[in-house]
Length: 108
Picture 1 (cartoon, rainbow, N blue to C red):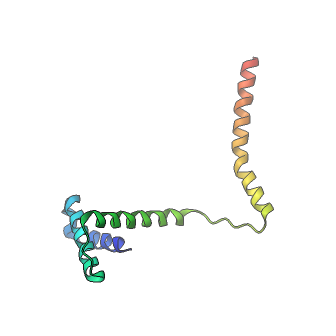
Picture 2 (cartoon, rainbow, N blue to C red):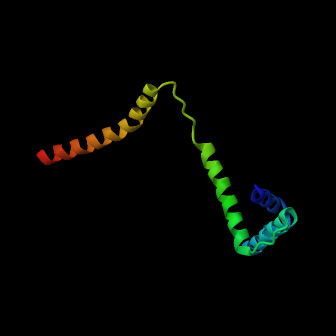
């Protein structure tokens, strides 16, 4: 959450567009360090802050991926079974077709 705010601030700041990635990372680490020092009174080293930054980035990416998954709700177990059968039926047909063509070519 904090990493997203920092990234938004950095993207909106026109001066950061010309900053090299290493400088942007140093600035982000420094912002995290100041935040944790003022909020919790804790002094963290760079590796711990980097870990927090990566966890926040991975969490935001995971949330985006989860939001993209369509929600499918079923009224009964039978509906769920038919849905699963329909999803796997195309693969069964593909495999049967491949083996059938292979068998016909072998006989011919």
